[in-house]
Image (cartoon, rainbow, N blue to C red; front, side):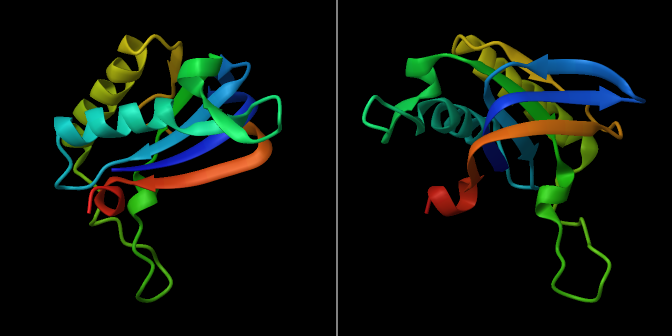
Length: 150
């Protein structure tokens, strides 16, 4: 599982030029799944996301997590996080989990974030979406469960 996490002032998702979800401060997450991801992977990553200390304290050091600070989450499915561009010029997406599995895991991930007490807005799984993010910092981090759990 990969999560491209961005600390943001605001973020929104539009489908066919209509805003369907938006947040005013917190985290924007682009979320992708691969073949060997499990519900345990999802639970681990949800805890990691809300526990990361990426917001500044009074000393301007990144010492505060979303769990401590509060804020909302915009979660957007993003199968292209597993694009393989090692050969040729056209990306391959064979490392991405099949749609049905990815959708189940995506729904579970968003449920886990909600259960942790956060407002979670989402995109539409499988839809062509426009995502608007006003990144704060900019703070952007790639979380890869395979790398983090070695």
